[in-house]
Length: 221
Ligand SMILES: [Zn+2]
Image (cartoon, rainbow, N blue to C red; front, side, top):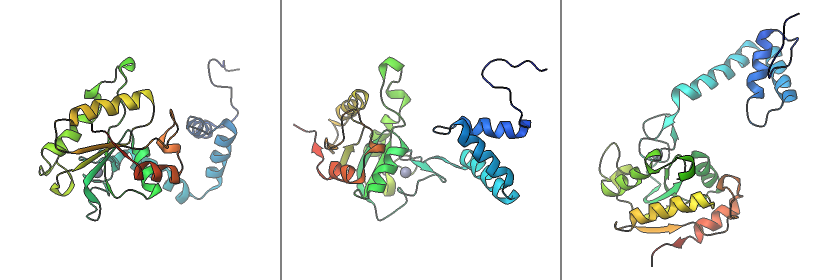
């Protein structure tokens, strides 16, 4: 009998089935039971369906990148929001992650551009300004006409809205950025505190997000 040790229970599944189960099980929110159900679904599915899933996962890693201006997810140099001429390009809403942007887009209350920091300042975890895209917010303001790193359409931003999560680290990141913006000729505001403290933008409902944008507060004075 083969020795079993460590994390994996001994399995009577063929290896190829067990690999799929383990892969699903490693995803957030997918327990062992669900992973088995998905694996058996795929086992019964047509080759086209199984290949479609496999290729979609591969493409996700091959094709998706960050917009070179705002760092939203994109499948080209610029994301769909930066290329959209109907957006208000004078306004930039700064968020931590692409999923925050998605939640705000779904609320449908904002028509400007975004800037995704890809994180937040966290000195205790060793995350400093150079680990985020903070300096690129300043580039968009200072040289909007730059074709590769300037603002979309070469339009000079007039308002920066801080849409960081209402946590200690989110607040710290917002204050840091506001300090950098002080000497620049832009209005700086932040989302109103409709969002629960310590809460996450991605989990807030649409009405709360819309209200937080509508009632945003100036950070001047
Ligand atoms: Zn973009």
